[in-house]
Image (tube, rainbow, N blue to C red):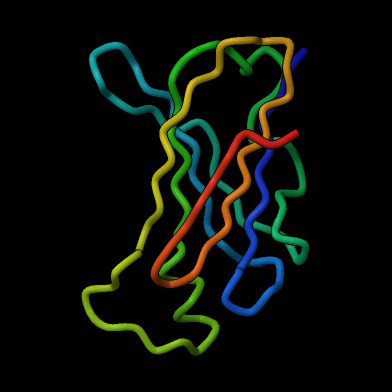
Amino acid sequence: MGYLTSHILDTTRGVAASGVAIELYQLAEDGTRSLVHKTFSNHDGRCDAPLLEGAEFKAGRYELEFAIGDYFAGQGIEMPEPRFLNVVVLRFGIADEDSHYHVPLLVTPYSYSTYRGS
């Protein structure tokens, strides 16, 4: 069975981003969202367990929300109000219920990138 993982890298400082609040939502056909999982990244910028696995790992549309603004504020980085990036939202789809989906986030206070990792 497949599963979903993530990894957050603070490319401003060249380190793993620990303590980032992460929320995973499943999106319904009508656009409503249901919270599936909430956690924080660990010292390695990863989650201690998959964000989605087992019987809950289903094909569909999802959103990951990363509380990046709070993370950078906690690192003592001064940012304007409102923050340029506060919550990074990544909308993606799961098509293959037998695959590993890895969604890394490379982030600074002013930019981010992602890709489907392995």
